[in-house]
Amino acid sequence: MEHKLGPFLVGLASSFKKDLDRLYEFLSLLPDHRFAFEFRHDSWFSDDVFGRFRGQSNLSLVVLGAQFGNNIDCFKNFDYIRWHARGGNLDVYSSEELAYWARRIREISNETDVFGY
Image 1 (cartoon, rainbow, N blue to C red):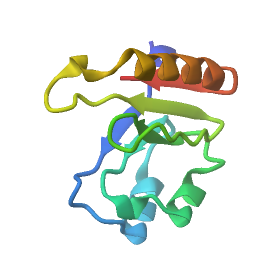
Image 2 (image 1 turned 60 degrees about the horizontal axis):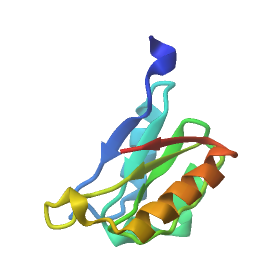
Image 3 (image 1 turned 45 degrees about the vertical axis):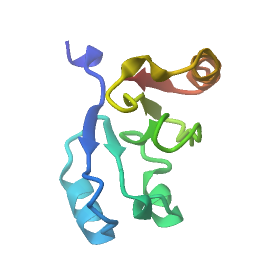
């Protein structure tokens, strides 16, 4: 069953600002498995954080379709895409947005595993 287990999601509160020392310490404690990180504070979206994730086969950043636009950075190991309800309503993604994500996931899946929620 282990081979079917997807990545664990580590979600940080929107009030939790970038703290590289805490991040690096936490990463050093992780077991050998895939982990997706959902950073919600803008301070985390920086080259020093991205650099720590690039090239790591067990780490990825969560892409938030609604909150951070349609920007996606493929880290070549796996991608975890998360769609949030807007205003508590799941039916708010337009046909154009859904078509974009369907096309983008097809492109990404040629390079890496893709998990979506």
